[in-house]
Amino acid sequence: MLLAEAKALSLRGLVDKQKLENLKGATSRMNIAQDLQALSTVLLDSWSKIQGKTPTTQEDLLTASRIGTRLTRLVGARDQGPAVVAEATDQAARVHAHAAHVRGSAPGDWLPAPP
Image (cartoon, rainbow, N blue to C red; front, side, top):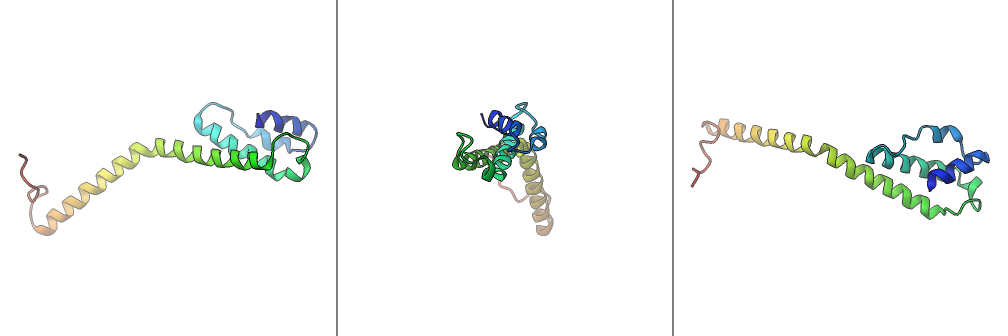
């Protein structure tokens, strides 16, 4: 809906058409999030020209921006998940190895025996 409004407003010279050309389209969740943020920014930047000429309110645009930001964080966290787990596992192994070295024992010697 925002894209259609932005395109219509750009045809009337109220929104910079070139800024809309950088939108990536709905090919992935991250693209949707980034486009939502970009659209809300473009429209908010043009608010003095478009106010009263579109059914979209300034609050709608602020909400769209917040949703885009949240979606970006969620998608980014999901995509980073395996890397974060691997890094944490590696760091934990290093801590255990260092602790074993400090104690003068082999890694795992100071751990309780399995039941």
